Amino acid sequence: MEVSGIEEEEARAEVDIWNYVFGYAKIAVVKCAIELGIADVIENYGSPMPLSELATALRCEPSRLHRIMRFMVHYRIFKQEPINQHTVGFSSTPLSRCLIKASWHCLNSRVLETGNNISPFEAANGKDLWSYTETNPYHNEVFNEAMACVARLTVQAIIKGCPEVFDGVKSLVDVGGGNGTALSLLVKAFPWI
Image (cartoon, rainbow, N blue to C red):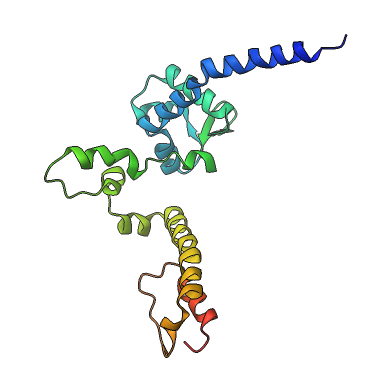
């Protein structure tokens, strides 16, 4: 039996309306995970984390947390991996690492408090940016690559827009150079440096 174009369109409309009506569920679960700090706890654990330990660390009721984690695994935000014959654990994914508590989640504390000299990053992570990256190689790599990405754009614009600035420059120091992207681009463009 063939499905007519109208029937197919009506079936698609029914699916779409259900997605609109219940689409908030995905956002609500992700928001819940961020607020609980699930990604932070699992990432810091370093290996597949059993539900019981995750629930203890988060001070959550295990059966309720299990529902959230099943949802998150279904949408590939976390992985579920065997720990032994009888136990499974939850592991980080590239997607879950995007949920690790960011400075933006603590921005309101910076705005609301008076006399607070702690940056939102420090409020979120317990350390200033430089101390945190020193002890977290993954974050250090991500941070340096983000800075390199910005350097690739801005340094190219400087090279193209005002190359005369480097006329006569024989040496250059890249202070706080991360992985050296900016300096390498400049030396390549102006080989006399």
